[in-house]
Image (cartoon, rainbow, N blue to C red):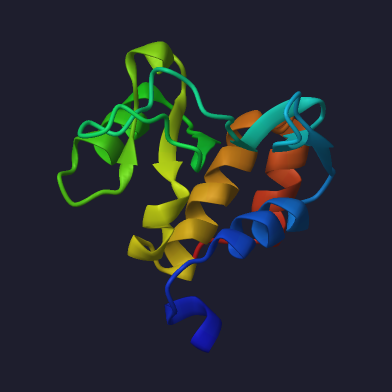
Length: 140
C-alpha cells in the first residue's frame, strides 16, 4: 500500500503508461517519449514550446507532460482548480488534454497519477479495449 499513498514521480508516468495494455512507446522528433494505444497518443513528454513559459524569466518549460482527458468538462475541472498542478495553454484550446510540469508531479499522489494515466489511456483506446480493461478493473 505504500506505493498508493506516496507522492508521484516522473518514473511513475513511464511505468504507468507503459503498463497499460497494447501500449507502444515511441520517441518524438526530439527524443521525447510518446505513449500510444492503437496508434493514438495518450501521454507524451513535450519538447519546450513558446506557449508554456516561466512568467518571470520567459524561459520555455522543458518538463511539460501532456495527458489526454475524457472530455472538456474533465479538462476544465482539472485546470480551474486553484490547487491543481495541471494547466493548459491557448495552443491546447479545444484539445482534450491537460499539461503538467514534471517539477510539480510530486503534488500528486501515486494513486492520483495512476487515475490520470488510466483515464488518458481509456480516452484513446478502442471501445473494445476500454471495455475489456474496465471489466477487468471494476471500480471499488
